[in-house]
Image (cartoon, rainbow, N blue to C red; front, side):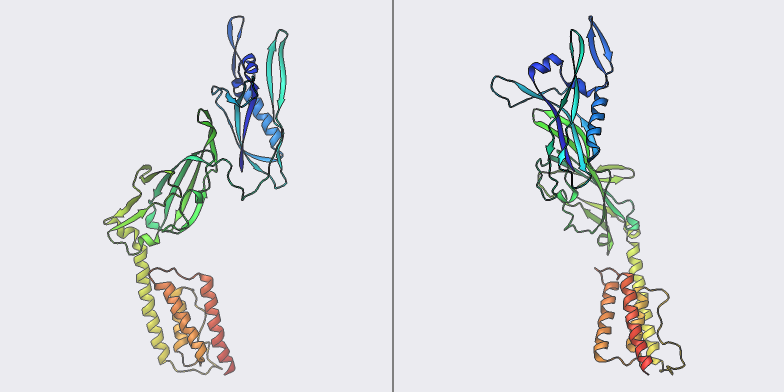
Length: 395
């Protein structure tokens, strides 16, 4: 995606004789006829916009067309001696090529109206085509300036382990990607998803003493994993916003109070007091569940040690696939296999089984870890059931 400035270059004399070119950015134009002011509706702006779309639609996705302020006037440009040239900014185009074969911006055209003694004369004024090369690694030719960020943390669904940051960025120029604005890669909380809400929006084509540039805006929603904040929380849950990549970026911090965003600091307390128990409740359930699972494993191990080996030719399988595959059911099964006298595992297999049990228990009960995915549990269970069945077949 890239931007294109569309301006009309002219001499001061032509601008004076035409009455100025700002009228081509309006649909209704006042004109004095016989001392009276009348309002004409030549639809200059609509006609110009339609001409731009017709010229570009075959090769580009037109993300937006932003017209200049008709009253912003012309800008002086460098010109040969004794000649005063100016440019009148008309529009800013935000474009994306439809495929990689596009290598130029085609000729654009505007129709200018002049009046003489015999009436109106329409003169078409074309532009020269511009050669382009789309390269993702090309450096930005017009880096954004005056970048401003607003970060709004949304902790209203923290009890459901949902935490979000709404990020709104504005800039003089085109707003960069989010990872160029915020330090998210090394942030203390895992980023689960980033949603680009509406894409890049150009709100204004600025024409002033400080230059000609688009003013753009972009917004995202960043979904975070709040588990590290909630685990072990007792009196308060604290949150720190991610830092900006550049010290020149102006950052405003806010939080939601009911439906409205209010000012906040870079580090805030999301929840404190009695409310902490509500948002951290899911963690307490996990630890209670883990304790119950360990007791179940111990009981199953004790029963397995007391069980006498059965006749493998007539008895049903000693070990079966769990009806519900969870870390606790798989740990229990592996402990039963480990302690069973009916499965004569060799030394290497026993070491591997012990290691698998230890790894799975760490994934399930360790303080700073996450549960193993279901597909890993299924594969682990099938592998050890296959080993045990091979011994029954041999016997």
